[in-house]
Amino acid sequence: MEKPKRSISKLAPPADNEPTLNVTGKGAEPDFATKPIQLKVPISKHKEMKSYAAEQGITMREMLLEGYELLKSKRG
Image (cartoon, rainbow, N blue to C red; front, side, top):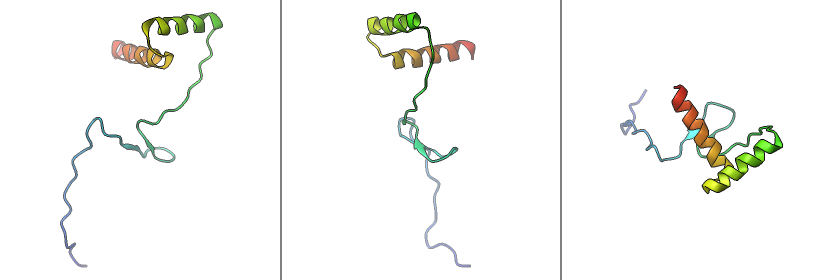
């Protein structure tokens, strides 16, 4: 068996802000791809959440993602 003509050097890991591929499941998708989720909440709660998000100048998506991060950091 012949030696490779060029040596292969190790690559540095991608920067935190560089998109990478998720190759652990079916099909590879970039980390920045989105996936829809559905929540069933009472109509009155939905109106309350939507109003609050609008008052804060953010989308419901932003509000829910921020809420998730806060809860995750609180519970560890």
